Amino acid sequence: MSLCRADKPGPPEAPTVSDISKTGCVVTWQPPKQDGGSPVTGYQVERCLAKTDRWLKISKGSVTELKFSVTDLVEGNEYQFRISAENKVGVGPPSSPCPPFVAKDAFSKQFLFSRIRLIFRKFCDVINVRYFVKKSY
Image (cartoon, rainbow, N blue to C red; front, side):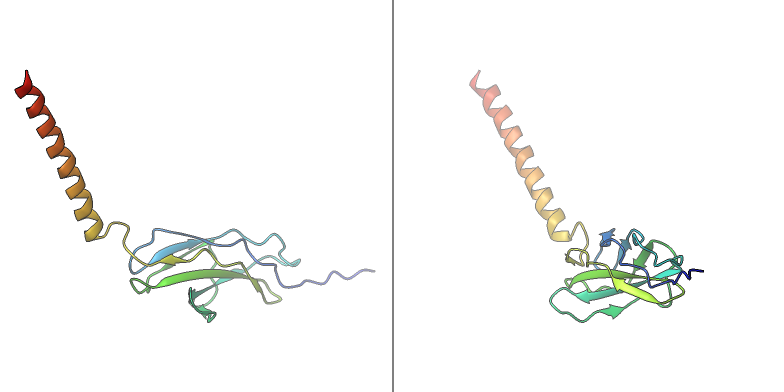
């Protein structure tokens, strides 16, 4: 007679971050390759400031989906996330962290104004060239 003993799950793949804004983002990941012999029942999401090693659990309870919406980032801070899988035996080791990213809106006012100035300059150059070409004929 052989007994099959379950263990904690392995680490999930490193998470990816999308929909980054100055106050939030969406973190997604893939399940671990090894479930420890017992189905994964949920995940824990942790974050840290990129310049520290202090990881903080930000999911209240266990997350059952492979996605988590973060809504409490501080603009200008650089963050990283990691994920741990959980089964009936316990919580497994964390994933590798995602690459660091800065909490900021994709299109800041400064970026938009610089793009508008660039477009305006190009437009004015085109008008000046057309005027010069017409006048020289």
